Length: 93
Image (cartoon, rainbow, N blue to C red):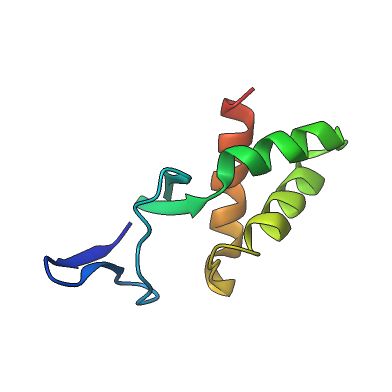
């Protein structure tokens, strides 16, 4: 994740300017070579896996739709996020 830190203010994303959560529910995954924090990824993967969707496109769209509720997903990076999320889904097995 592109971040900048000021010891008095916390850590901010240099892409969107938002505060970077250091909470335990945040996982960092590589998206286009940049470590990016995703909130609720493990729970989302479990929920999508329970749906038993038929193909990768459906899995990717469901992951993106669910995670977009609590995470900023830039429109121009949607495909990259989708690919990274699908890779995490597969890795979680």
